[in-house]
Image 1 (tube, one colour):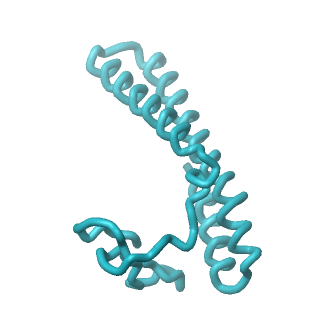
Image 2 (image 1 turned 30 degrees about the vertical axis):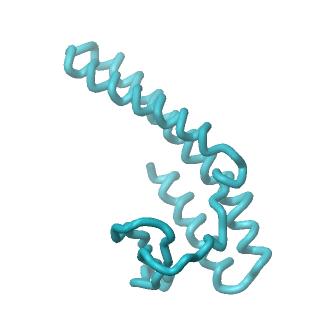
Image 3 (image 1 turned 180 degrees about the vertical axis):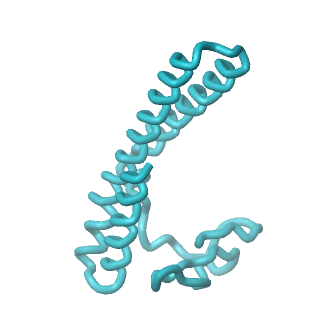
Length: 132
């Protein structure tokens, strides 16, 4: 679990609780630490692309609210829900792809317990996407 406990940077990661044997960390203000790993969407310079796509999806959600407020035809609303769902799935698949190609591959190269954790996280994420 990563939890903002207030204060400012830099943050240190303090072990807290575990979920199915996976160590979780709590972010605490304190000692200066550089992150050991850079998120793939940052490393691949795609953060701005994801933000643009998410803002577009946010606009779609507002449009859906407006359609319901205006009592528009159900099928038209459902069509827009489908488009928004597809857009969210596209973002999720892009993030998953980058995570697999960057974070999981790096952890696999390192081997050991961290590799097992990253593979389990990826597997769980895939399972959540398939269920949604």
